Length: 120
Image 1 (cartoon, rainbow, N blue to C red):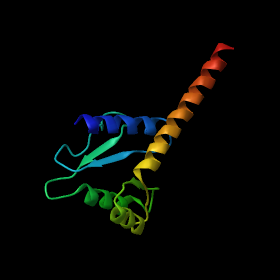
Image 2: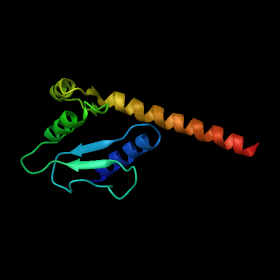
Image 3: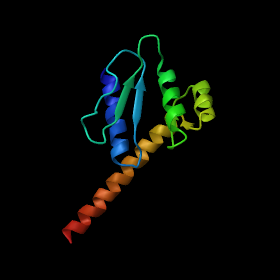
Image 4: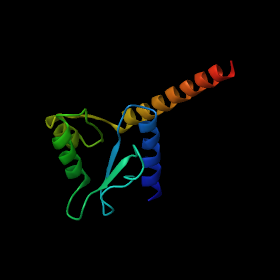
């Protein structure tokens, strides 16, 4: 649970400091979505019994890839191929980590610049 919460918190930072809308899908039982009451919160989905997170991801990609840019972060090559077939794109964990770090650095630089301007 702590690892999931940490991941969602990290991805919330990415969403808050970029133009990304983040959706996280976990295997396992849980509530259907979370953070619904938080404006622009990260959406979290859990697969149901007898369903995998991959099948949820595929359903999301099939539904939304024709209207929105969908990028799935996974190391599963079969899932990456499936998402591409559905019109989405994918990245590996290292690329996601780089996106998170770049976004955080960009936000820090922006805040620093704003702080300098407010002092003048």
